[in-house]
Length: 152
Image (tube, rainbow, N blue to C red; front, top):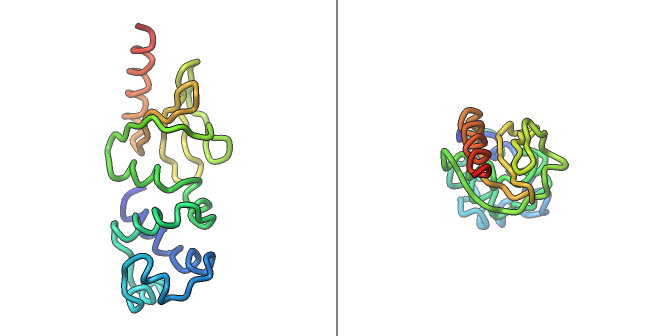
């Protein structure tokens, strides 16, 4: 997924997110910091949110069921993977029981891929996210590095 694809998906879901919360166009425009006219243009498919607007919408409404179904979980992980080439963290996850498929694994680490967004992540044995990326080669390289470091 690219930033443009992300922006397109979020823009297409703007109206559904607004309706999910039962907000008027005026209230929604105020919440995400755009004019009502711009919001109407986006809802009609004539315009798109920018990167900042898409990130703001996903951050403010991170618990939205519409966004969760669109991206296969919390969109924050996708945002960070798009913003940084090699995003690293140590955040506890649910272990990928719903939106994730195990690709490769050892006792201490495993690679998973999101079934909807198709991005990758590496989890440790306690289901903490080590890193995430859309770059398969980077994830596999980082996985080998982690395994080698764990052997020492």
